[in-house]
Every structure is written in structure tokens, then in C-alpha cells.
Image (cartoon, rainbow, N blue to C red; front, side):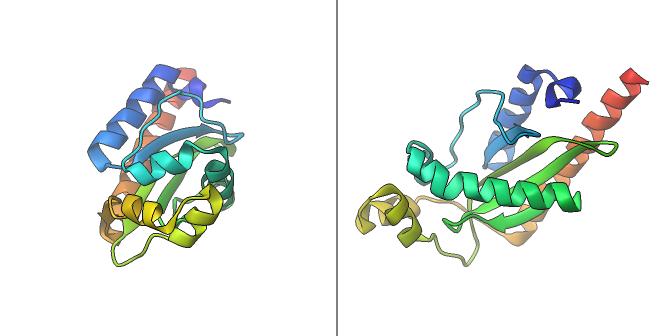
Length: 171
């Protein structure tokens, strides 16, 4: 079972676009191997765009957070809401069809209200000056815990509908 057995690649991309626009996050759908498969690139802030423009940033920050949180989501079968090493919130909802893990949907790129961007981690990973990272960090939008939980509920309901629709057409 693949993510594209549930929705087409274009439909998953439309989902990512809608998630990005409605909830103001870097939206993503990953397959069970942890690979992005739609080709949709989106950034809610210039800091994330800078991090993801460098292989070192992806490896040191984004990939580490994704692997860790995707594993938690797969193991617990629950949505995970945690900050990445840069201090930005990441939300991961697992996609299961029965007992088969199919992938992850979610979003990231907003700073938890009252939190701080981990500028030192970003400076070291990307080799940027403190001033440059601080300037980019100042442009990161915040998110409350309630907003993050609203996104999580939205993702969980969306996944439930997609899986139910796919199950009814294959039954």
C-alpha cells in the first residue's frame, strides 16, 4: 500500500497546497520510507527556506526531526507535535490503512508562542552569522498550542476520510 493508492500524487499536492494556505505551515506528505513524493515546495518563512536550501541544514535539522517524529507517530499511531532542533514546531500525523503504515502528513515552520528560535544550532549547521540568522528568525510566525492542536485534529480527520474513502472503493 502506497500513499498514491489513497490519493493521486496531484491530489496529495493539492492537499499540501491547501494545508499551506489555510494553516500557514510548510506542508508535506511523506511516503512510508520518509520521502517527499509530490514535488510541492513551500515555505512559510524565509528561515525555513534558507535551512532547506542547504544540504547541511536539511541533514542537521529537518531530516533529524522528521525521522524522529515520524518514528514516534508510526510507533504510537498518534499525531506528534514537537519542536525541531531549530525550535520550530512540527506536526506529524501517521497514515495507516488497517495495520499497514503508509506515510505521514503534516506541517512545520512556526515558532511556538513564547519560544525562541535556536539560532546557535542554525548558525553551526549552515555556517551563517548570528546577525543573518537573527534577521531570518525574526520573520518566523508564531503558533499557539491550541492552533497546533487544531491543525492536528484537521490532519487526523483528513486522514480518516481519505483512508475510509479508499477502503470503501477497494471493498
